[in-house]
Amino acid sequence: MAAAIPATLIPGDGIGPEIVDSVVAVLAALGAPFAWDRQAAGMAGIAAAGDPMPQATLDSIAATGLALKGPLTTPSGGGYRSVNVRLREAFQLFANVRPAQTLIPGGRFEQIDIVLIRENLEGYYVAHEHFVQVGDDPHAVALSQGVTTRVGCRRIVEYAFDYALRHGRKTVTVVHKANILKAISGLMLDTAREVAQAYLGRVAMNERIVDACAMQLVLNPWQFDVIVTTNLFGDILSDQIAGLVGGLGMAPGANIGRDAAIFEAVHGSAPDIAGKGVANPLALLLAAGLMLDHVGRGALAGRLRTAIDQTLNADGIRTGDLGGKATTSELTQALIARLG
Ligand code: NAI
Ligand code: MG
Image (cartoon, rainbow, N blue to C red; front, side, top):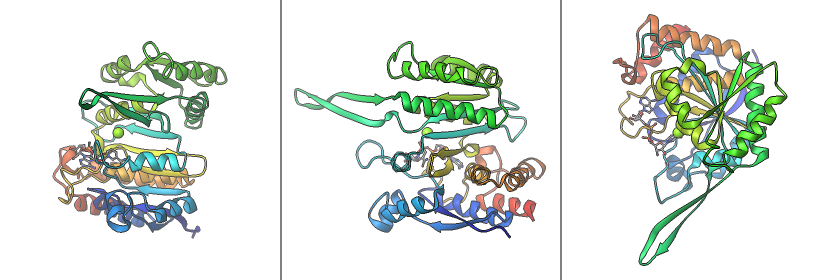
């Protein structure tokens, strides 16, 4: 048997522990090689160690370079900064790769196959934000300063073109708002045009303004292959693209850096359904599939995706978000039976 691969496991908040338990059980049935080091973060980190991002969790990811992470709750407004954002910064996970494929035929859109690659460290997520007081209103004016660097743009666009080459994809669409945000978005577009020159004849480049792209994604999503864009646009468009393939319960994501990678679902901690045993574990399971691809175990990832397809389509076992009646544990058992 191949050697075990140490990997950090973060159950997370809300539905996190439920879907992580499901994924761990399915991966065990698959014979996935991961040796899990379970660590806390988010609200669970505060409960366990008084810190939403405990040092032990950071040390574990630094040692393994590989993590599977449940969603983490971030209180809106005041409170602490998003631990998701801080983890991406701590490990310089510059690329957020979010593939969306139709897994259930007969929905609003058939045969969707789009990979969105989102810059993960810059833009409006660097949080140089503050308020200005006017008269007696301390929050009269809100200011936010985003950051785009040429190095950051080059790194993400090259990643997108290399991804396209590695995966046999033909076109990279750069999504921007350079007509209005001439500096912060213009630098991305200019850099992308430069980078694209090196891939001429191998991967084509398209350009779309973000608002037009949002409309085109609904009118004719099949025109898109790989999309690369800045942080905030990528956040918004990846949720939209998830909607083309059945919603957030079906959308996995990979945060990739030079020295570490963290795999997660695109969705959050879903407090509205937490603890009810009805959450869809497939987004996180598909993320585990990306993690298997990442460590060179593509055959296992393929078996996993086949089992998911059989469970959804041949067995007709689906959770509520997909219009079915199955609980998390019923879906988990059905997946395990398919892997048996
Ligand atoms: P959300 O993604 O948690 O939920 C949005 C809607 O989708 C809810 O109705 C929820 O029930 C449903 N949903 C999400 N995942 C589902 C699943 N696996 N199965 C079935 N239904 C599912 O977004 P929301 O409510 O805006 O955020 C909740 C919390 O999660 C916030 O604190 C937010 O900051 C955090 N969050 C964390 C992320 C992460 O850890 N990567 C990503 C997005 C949000
Ligand atoms: Mg998001």
